[in-house]
Image (cartoon, rainbow, N blue to C red):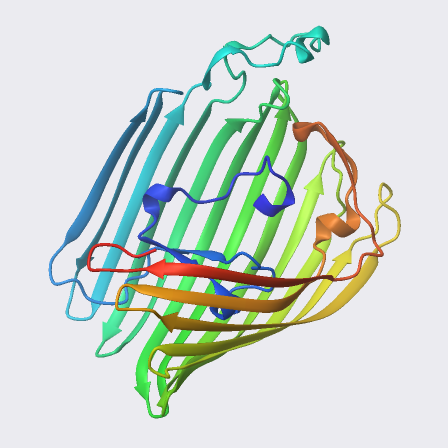
Length: 380
């Protein structure tokens, strides 16, 4: 639900991230059909894939002066038997209002009186304080080159919206993740399966009263297979499904209940021609967005979309440290539930949002050129 508005927090904290990957070019189509500028792939170790030789752990503590931000996080993995490994992580975070030099509003804006009960911010950004906590427990059964596991996690946060001084958001997400994988299945180098189920809720609270409650319940499944190298060619392909129901409940709700589903088929192939490495990515998405009938938003409507995407890239190695990359692509993206069916005032952002039920898919062309550098210490 973070995609529904800029005031909706993303339900994870960087302190729990094991690794962050920046994926660009044809490979980005493995993760979505609107990644014109690339994809940020967040990797955690909540479902262990290898048996740790000994217990490992990490503790992180941070403090920020601009908002008295205090973060404390921990994570760890351990082998508990010949084939079982467990993971645990948790964090707490709290911050006060952001400090700023002078007034929060410009001199011109201060000529307009504030709403009754609001305070002119001078030295701080009023209603920017936040607090959050999260925790996760995961376990895997690991044997030879195969694994299967699951993790349970929870993320909760409360924060001010800034746009409205009297509005705060109370958010909670509970999530179950499943994963399994194996290697060396004849022609297949590896096979990976992932699934998740999540229950997300957040409430926009105005002056102590709940104005709107957002709920997002659904699941996702993904199967990915990588084939053994055939001559100069290597690559992978897979399928992905995503189904969820989004609800906005309350007198200030600006969206009807929607039922959303998408199904995708994707593939990536690369050729190793020495200093030249051309690649091709393709993706086909079938998606459906259906709104429920209601007294506020009228009759329900069912929209279906089919979108194809293709991207071609080439990487040329200038020398062992520098490479030149060129990528081009044609992308097509279906409108989401908010772009189609929003119709009302969004109090937390001081906006009136109105969708268009007749929208068609968004199409784009992209091209980029980049210089890449890598050595023993860094790459970029």
